[in-house]
Length: 570
Image 1 (cartoon, rainbow, N blue to C red):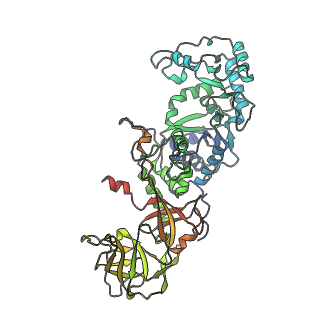
Image 2: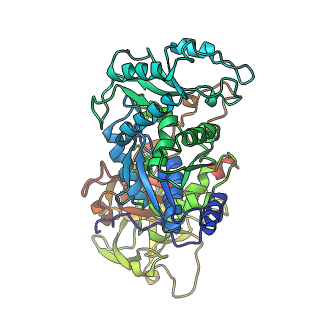
Image 3: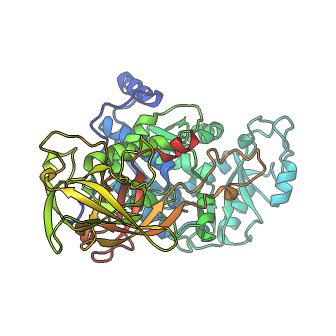
């Protein structure tokens, strides 16, 4: 089989997009002439790998720009050197490109603006809107108050602009240690919005930055940096998740009070983040899974990371389709992960070649088939795609079928193989079970069968019908496979609900990975890493991108053919 094609198809997809409130805002802004062109941005913090929640934001921001002949910037919000790394920067770029999007020349880093941000801080200080505070972290908490009780003013709140400029210079030049001073905005200590009670703008970090090195000893807080970055880049629609709605008043306060030096006045718009059943959606908790070796890494196929999905065999087109299907709202909700799995199945059904593989083998001996003979039968590669053509599969006297496809004492509605019953072998012949072999313990070790030579190809010339069709592999030519049966990492539907007193770690699914040896038709021995396939009647699989290689195949289960969890719940 040839190397799988690169997965960088243009996006968005051809299907008509759903109308939602952000699309309407953009349409109205363009119609009114408020903006001549749309500029959005995707601003990840490079402190971890992206997950499916980020994929929704990527598809939204890049998709809206493409729909409106605009631009979407990729910007690394790298304002916290203690948690960031170049490894994360490169993984973010790879994930976005894999999803089918590109930022062209519009790649930016918050750290590129540190000089400009410093100037903005000086401007606020000079206007009497920011001051240097020396409260410890514990004192700051004690002074904070509650939503109904005003904060206690810092003893340094009424310093003059000249004094604050001098103190800020000391912060910048290393006169103060970490935690000894911060720069705070001077807004409203009685505001019911705690984010408006003199939020911190800058803190000291004696930590080298992966981009700026040791140039800076002070670093801007995210809430200070983000609106400035949007303004510097002239972002027209700054789209973020709903938890930032309470931060918007400070966003607006900042760009309004710096309007005389900023090149634009961006607008923040919030939408509900993606929450999936049976799925953990916190980079901090995902990092904990990795550090505690509860998974094999960020790209473990059980992880909801984009790189994990890629290794599991998910497709970019299916993820984009899923993100479009669930839509964009202002209300937090829990999306059933089965909807994502349905999107994966729907895409793989159209694009994946078929092959036969047996995961729990039972030997079948066709007694009336010539010994030593092997014939090569035609099998259709993909019934959903006539252009996919056919392949040759070997057939001989001894075969392997799934053990579950035989029952010695079968009920009437069991339509697979049983003593005296006739079934169809996929692409091959009708066979009838004539005997059963057992070991001393009574375990079935082999089946004796006969075949009808007139049914070659799977149809009987006399018109007789059988209700069961089984997949199989030729025992002599079967290729052993390492098969990893991945399942959902957690057994609890809503991991945000801890009313049972348990933590998310208590709900790890002990059956999220089972590794077995399967047997497949010869072609699978040479599948290149990343190549997807449907094991007929079993599920969708992918040759592992790390561990599989031609001659030593390792296949990961991408998704079952049907929603087995829904069936179990019933």
